Image (cartoon, rainbow, N blue to C red; front, side, top):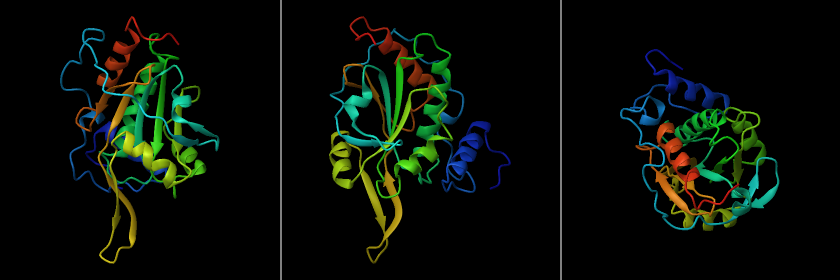
Length: 232
């Protein structure tokens, strides 16, 4: 893979993706999303703004990379949650790899933040039950998750379990087929990453244009400072 001229952050996520057996583009033909580089403006000061509730964060049946079956609400627990929908073979550098890269930066900086350390849980939920088995998810997780941090890589045991979760979070996924109707093994989707409070309410939804570690961290700190937030 040619690497000359790639921004350091973009190069890092491409190398991590290769280690996780993803098939990344050989060149950065599309401009990398803002989340890979320094923010071009000052992030808002945590606690200086309000994040309105956007609705309830839905529940659903899932399976963790350890093979344990559980429910999303049980996984959320009493933490502030950042939920991303991914699939491990995603080839769009501004899609699932962007989500995993930004969450890895949130992970790193949360560990050093006394307000967030121990209070944040990251959840990456695959929408590819056929290929993202618990073993595949655990292999993918090894490129991003740091020991001791609360980051869960989960999937669903079947399409029947997955479908109501995708519907509830309005996460559209289209499986790509050729002219004869044969599944090509790829999927098209709009990246959506959800910020969820301790009362299991959605408080923000990040698109690729606004998914940046600085912004996610400011929002997490804002939720942590809310006087009516349930204590962990």
